[in-house]
Image (cartoon, rainbow, N blue to C red; front, side):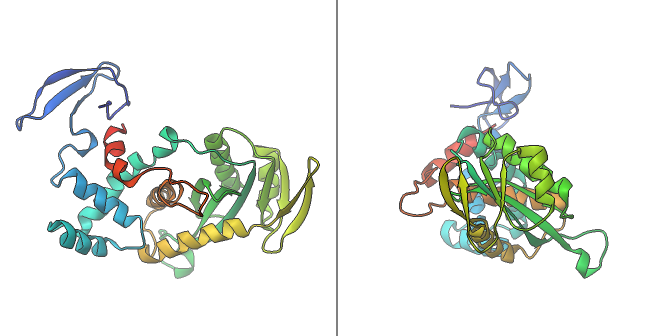
Length: 279
């Protein structure tokens, strides 16, 4: 089934053919045109090559290593710059998995932040570090991410607001480390019980139930980001950093089975068709 690549509407009419014989359509809602190739229109390489490059880049492989693998598997010579441009173009479409395939988040959330490298206008080395905020639940599902240059209450509110908007509810308990910015942010945004517990577990009684809470769950998720970011060696812009982090989050939530009881959210063979139908 084909949907409009601009507004995802299924109401459209045929609108002639291109010079190469590709069927064109016109959306009845947004009045814009698109072709049967969808978001892969005007691409030099086939859809399968592009999708293979995207998901190879989701793993700790540089763009040059992805280029070499594609050349060995598909016998196609691709530039590493093309692989980078494909990620920038199609990553926003992959991030829409969060809307079409929602996850069931738990009522206990964890929030943590870590250093990542993002360049600023200032050339000083100490100014090249920024902060990656991650909100996850106790089932190791990432709810929201945010990259900022400052570690303050304003950015703490932003990531908690993102998590609240995506999950659609507020948690019963939020676990964090000793950062003081979380106290006011939780009272302002989530209005739930806030537990400060870093590595050492803390016993908590909530609604006649006993919990042993620590922030080790969030720390383990940070290890996956650290391994993947080691290949990137930093980002040049803040908006690109947020895009790449969300790109990896899709892989972590939907393509990486975690534990024997966890089911694979999306099958690998269905990925190209899902990308084609995402508008």
